Length: 123
Image (cartoon, rainbow, N blue to C red; front, top):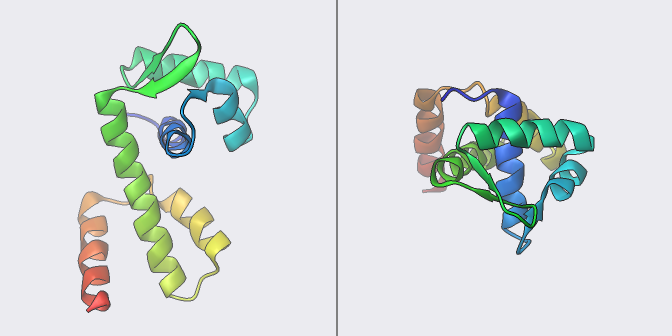
């Protein structure tokens, strides 16, 4: 399933929130992303239909195995790109914002090259 950038953002948000919360709800995602309840509800419905998110009877959101795999990949892209940009002297806030935009369009080949480059720089 090809997922759009907005869907990737929702998956990443659910993943990030699940790292600090025992249960993630749609309202948490909306607050985290700054989106309205109807927008979140629609997106979660699409992700559920796509087999990436489960919604429990209690309203708690969990990522499916494929949703978790995709969310981890997106989050890894974000952290690698943010790290690279800050190492170049970009402020943390700007680096994170720019990484957020880049992470959705960068190829696997380019990201792999960035990872290898970063490893070389570490020593």
